[in-house]
Length: 278
Image 1 (cartoon, rainbow, N blue to C red):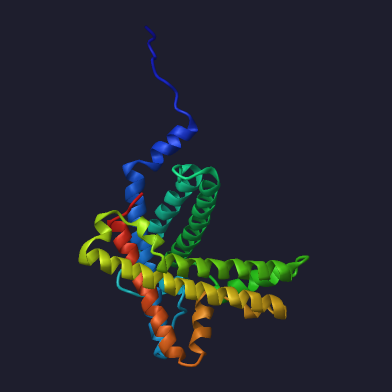
Image 2 (image 1 turned 180 degrees about the vertical axis):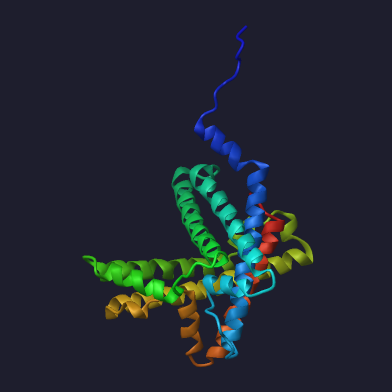
């Protein structure tokens, strides 16, 4: 009988064990709470903008600066940053070894989507740490203008910027479809979809995904317009998209509705953290 009767586990097996582990589950739930907080603060900033009292950009970066100004602000921002890093870690694991119940084609698509989410969460998490440590950073609008201008200087740069805009526009459309077909409901466990509370959670998800879809759609249009006019200043992120919405007829009302929707998405993140279906 061998002294060492142990079978070596492959990296794939280790990854699958990590994906199914309790610590990843806890990391995902903590991260979703942090992401929900960011959306609630963005919603609050957008409401202030709608009522003509905005002093901070209605974006994730603006939300982090707003949190930093509160009592124990640095601790709050550090907590959000750590939560987002945990969320990025969860999605990173999903990108590598997750979504195994789907067929090959759909699994690849799901893993690519998880990789994209991981990058987004990581970027916001890094921004949070910069805010918490007092590092200076330019506004999201200036950053968007800068890299859009660099893209336009490349061969076929206008086509590339237009393609990015159309992709963002497509994501916005996907969010709206996801909202009203209730595909997002799969993110909740059975308890989170039943009873009066479950109905409230589903409405939060509908309104939240719709609002995010509208915001993404406007961002996509801005990028396409920037490509058509060869003007990088016409592109922009969430803050510029909401400002554009404010400038439309009935703008304050429309912006307030979208702000409420973004707040609903934040609340849905809390519901998902409580009733996470992995």
